[in-house]
Length: 470
Image 1 (tube, rainbow, N blue to C red):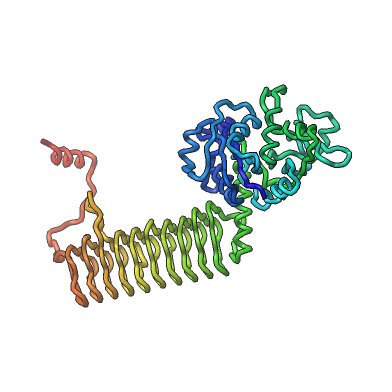
Image 2: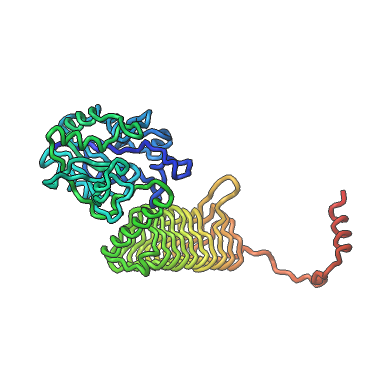
């Protein structure tokens, strides 16, 4: 097969978005629309990908930061044909050209491969078309008596009979580069918009005696373009539905497939269960038998087999081992690493900490910048005091240590193996292995103390005036 060059049109402003972002940077599942199209293009193994940019070009390039594509400027937006022509001088004549759109993000690689085969097998200009019940607003695919494609007619130029046609143009096409370049050069601007329209290449190819092939898109959702926030929401819903279906086919059970939000690439093992309103962001892997409770947010995380994440928990850039119990209302922040059989309970926060197997922090604790051994118990209300106002300091808790409730571990500090820290202690120096350490002030009773009584406003004013008088 001839080498492939992909041209992605991404120069439009998208005024109907009413946004400061260029249209192709509007987010779909947490990534720009254009990124989805580029990813699909990469899956076809092209020799080159050319992104034709215009409005907000610097912003688009900065946001994508993709060094695997070539950026081509369309300084004047003079139509789709003009946009493709900006890239054509860079494409060898023996390539196949595939034209995609930066605001059509759901196009499937399998459909594009079929389109490319149609073009490459016969050296044809091949179009991706769609049959829809109501074609209002779309260009119609016109066929001759032999059912061959003869032209694309825009609705405003169509006759009443042509407007009855329900096969529409999606804009996606593939063609041999050498011939395609010649057809584009023959496109004129004698239309209402005074633009060079890519669709005119079809009629020019037919006049040159070239057959035009057509491939039907699998669904309307696949080729839906995004021009405003309503359509963006529709595409987002389509994306969620597609991803939810893929997860279920991979072995996950979803409590309600309509109430899961997937904003990245999610892989699952067998018999995973995901409850309602889970949000999965970025690269997420859920091992076999993982259970995700309602209202959880999992972002760029790996969760080991048989682990259960209870309701309302957040796991962000963390690695969780097998058979762990997280939450409810727990938060694992970046660089938290949990070994097997770890319990992190309600209102416990872990950040940049490694926690060994069979350790637990079940209630109201903060474990940050810490290395925790295996078999450790961290009591309710404990804090690794890691920040002195300028620097972060580490805490090390060795195997088998027991840290009593309400303890403050002032870093840098080491808690010895098998040692106990008495409840309510403030620990500022290392503790001995296997020993009990207390760091409390001496308890006293004030015999003369009286419970505060209620003062009148005048009395309170007098007291305040005395207290703040210079």
